[in-house]
Length: 320
Length: 175
Image 1: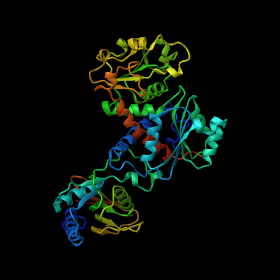
Image 2 (image 1 turned 60 degrees about the vertical axis):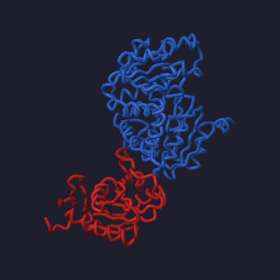
Image 3 (image 1 turned 90 degrees about the vertical axis):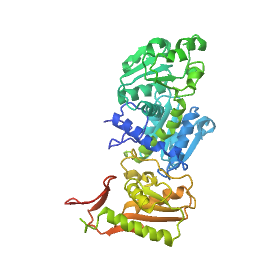
């Protein structure tokens, strides 16, 4: 397989996008994460696997959950973690991205975890950094958020065990959601029966059906007989034009309410990558209700990120 | 088969008697038996029963403590440890099926010490195969073996437990 994320032996060295990764690699990540799950529940929440490795969190865009879980994941593997606050760094003084990378390389780091508002930033760094350094994409623009997608897949497997018979819907602002794009790719690769997207036309990318999903414009049709409901956030900060009449109107048409939830299977799980806009895309009673696995997703995020860090750092890159 | 030096029940009986002596000689109090997953766990269960120890057997999986991170093929089958909350000051009997290079015992000791400072740790193994690479050795073993360079001894189980000497040319089994 020709994929820039893999080394010559076909093993994972960077983790930038789900696209092009095989079912075997995704399953290896999920199985490895399964092993790491126990560590967070032990009295000693640490193993020495990545002792001596230095991991730099480069967050050019705000994040609480993702950055915290990456930091915890690295600490639990005994790596040294450095989270650089870009707001107060040299970037804000005009240093280019490449110069920032070169300087950190000179400090002999082993991994960059990158979040950036521009799509392709992680890919760019992976292609321009030293061969021994692994790059993990923690969200780039509207392109991809592959670690979030993998922790979602992990959570689905935890509750539903087998991907094959599942009907899964992603509901909400698909247009601006890098999470939705990565989820669709992961669900396709892992072979679920049906992937739906449910959103108003203004919040769907054009030609979205080419991704192999069924498109629905009403909740009543889209929720019917579902196993997994994934709500995604209304990304007001990325909306540059009037895509919606109002938040109230959006909740009325596309909010997940108790009544609508009854349309899905009785054992359907409700997921949300966070942060939640309560009363905008999801009713509070559902976010805190028995079918919600939202906090379980957060816990799983640590194990999944530990797995991805371990697998990528275990495999050396190809020297150029 | 009675004269077979690798008969598991004979090896377990020898270990049981040596451990009894050690427990009394070192004055071990309420010893905690810990088996190294997976063969060590099976042997620990047997010895725990024979010695009628009170506290349940602890299990550790040392995969995350190995010294060959980049050569390890996969971390997908690693089991969570089953250890009591309080390890500080405990008397521990660490059990493994085979002691060979000593690297597994090194990893297990590091892992145990991450949980606290035990008062004593005793290492007991079913088979000690000569080939140490680190300055550690078991306190007691069922049998010491010198095998050819390409030969390895492996325990299969849990029921029935059997020892296989594996080499490219022959396979000798004892139960």
